[in-house]
Length: 397
Ligand SMILES: [Fe+2]
Image (cartoon, rainbow, N blue to C red):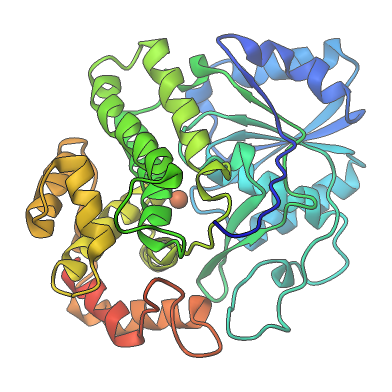
């Protein structure tokens, strides 16, 4: 294990009806809140009326910014920042899935950011001078309603530049952690099956990537990291079919909600240097083809397993197959996993997003533009070349 410093200051509140604390918790950080959520909030029922009334009860004024879309864009953040400045808000509340929460974070930092907002995001990994990290943000309160990204307990935000179709992220522990996150499993009961399943596949991928691509990964023993990562994967893998059968079971929903938080709140990767090449390739499918984030990760996990089934350096993948499916046949394991994802109703091939062989060069270039380093490789273990990126997309057609 390498040296590490772990810092996660998010106050996590979990429980049915705990959304009722949104007013008192927000009042600790500001007098006027910007509530960031989706352009369509009809599926939330009376949630926003309840949030408004709790804020009023606690003396917090508010303005709604309902501008988030499924893959949030820079222009949406700019609009939110403008509204936030005009309304003189001093705290930001994000309500929704990763998209709404990430947009809330970028707005909270963007209001205080003196540079072009695009410089806040790692839209290129080959030009070290492009990125200027945010150093401060308004206090952030998050209400996750879709278990998936763990944005509620990590310092990351993902966004797309609509002008260049580059989708990337900012990771900044100094200012992008929420002050408080309220996980109320009741808010996830009405989630449609597709969103529920995509969120689960995404959360699985958050534990799968460190298992595959961490430099401290062991090939023999089951060390602590292995056990934590495999434990999270198994928990979600076994739980989500039950959620699909009993969507109103609040215990199952709550278990899913906390599992997704644990998958990417930092615990699984303490003391390891890891990479997320599957996410880098998945982001291009979202920004160029509008594919749902979790679905892109399902496709990428399968394609990487199949790619490494044909290569020698596949010990970690074989170990994964053995621990999850009790087989060392990686192709067979990918087949089982594909059927599992299909049964959840989630795409397993990028052709289902409208991709064909004619798109491979554009998709590959998209990864090169954003995620290739100055040496011309995609960070991974082992590092991946342009040709390999293309091959993995091709396997996924
Ligand atoms: Fe993800």
